[in-house]
Amino acid sequence: MTLLHTAWPAPGAPGTVLGGVAIGELFKTPDAGWPLQRLRAPLLSASAAFLQEVWHTSNPVTSGHSDGIHWRRNVDVLYGVIELPEDACAATGDTSPLQAASQLVYERVFGLLRTQGLPHLWRVWNYLADINGESHGLERYRQFNQGRHTAFVQAQRDTGGQVPAACAIGVAAGPLSVAFLAGTSPLVPLENPRQVSAWNYPAQYGPRAPTFSRAALACPRGQEVLFVSGTASIVGHETLHAGDVAAQCVESVRNIECMVQEANRVARSGRPFSLEGLSHRVYVRHATDADAVQHALAPLLRGAPVVCVQADICRADLLVEVESQAIHPMPAA
Ligand code: 3EB
Image 1 (cartoon, rainbow, N blue to C red):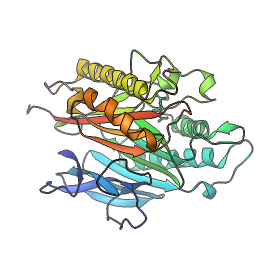
Image 2: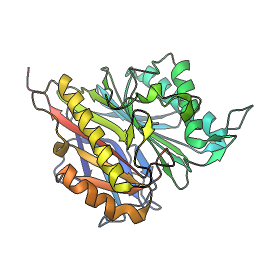
Image 3: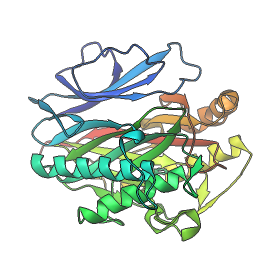
């Protein structure tokens, strides 16, 4: 099994596409035949209006549509995408439509993983409209956290500790969109010694804490994958450098560096992870900050590939968030 993550089209990429994401102006993205997440957010300072990133596998795949999830899998890894418009879910009692939609999406994902026999959720990409907006007396990101948390509890899953790496990002409009990678083998969750674990955030950040780990190591056959979750200028549980996007970049990279260190304590491929060996996606709240962000990040990330997207971050005082990943081959046994 080889998992390969590339920009599309990837000349000479071996094997089959498992699934992927299209980012940018996507009004006419053709149906790819494989699971495709549409991230409807402007690319910043890119040469194209949109780009695709795909996961390849060298093993045979099967695919399907179950419960609104388009998925494709090989023997040990599954990539799936589910999009659910909130207005498909009614508000009931004090449950908002977004909370209900979030719970339903995760229930469906857990149901699929059960029937497909890949119980371990490794990495989740969550996108929702108007993430900092408020309704039903609660910020929408916090509504999402409630629905996600309830689904984890009802599926009798861990809500702290053994939880996936993730991001939760705001876009202008559109359905709740969730893509995920899951596997037959458990992940190794990693936490940041500089930060309170997100699943342990105090109640000032909402009635239910976010269900994600700061990073995860996953082992598809023959490989070791490091997923660093969306990482922002948070130390302890507090936002630092409100209003200063360059300083938020520096703090975010410090946090990612810590996750690289944590990963290297447990990595087994024999080759250490490093900042410059990761590929990064950067979410910038204000398009006008794009240059400042690129200036701040370029020397820190030392030439590593960076895709820059305009999107909202889950706390109103956060201006930038960075997520990262790397795939290392395992030495032959
Ligand atoms: C933070 O550290 C910033 O809710 O899945 C980062 C990554 C953030 C994932 C999520 C939220 C999530 O709290 C926000």
